[in-house]
Length: 161
Image (tube, rainbow, N blue to C red):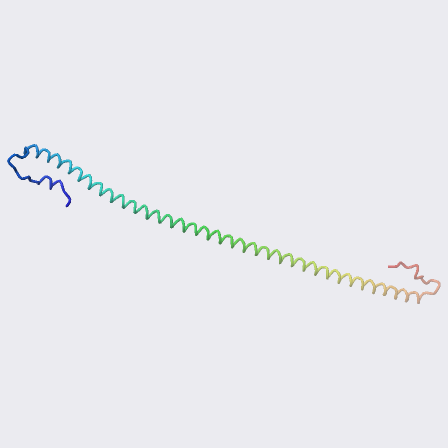
């Protein structure tokens, strides 16, 4: 059972014939009451303060856990952003490489096409040149047949081409 200052204050002692001096006992009990009351109040205040500090500690632990969770979440988010950025950059690089390959392939195809056209034009030019020379030779023969023999041009005197 907890002893309170009021318990001390209300305590009555039995009287005996040769007992202690009542006034001295009362004074001492008054001192004990005052000191016990002071200690009792201090104890109550300390218990109340301990409760508040326990609540604060609990709040701080809750905030600490929340901060830890927030930091973990932020780290995960940062990792996700970094991973996403890496994937995106890889995709952009792949697309750029594919476009570059296509541009190079298109350029090579164009070069092949231009060379084919050039070869075709060169062949056509050769055919034209051969036909033109043939036409000129035919015309020269016609002219030579129509001119008297002494005026005929000698084929050796014609330029070769």
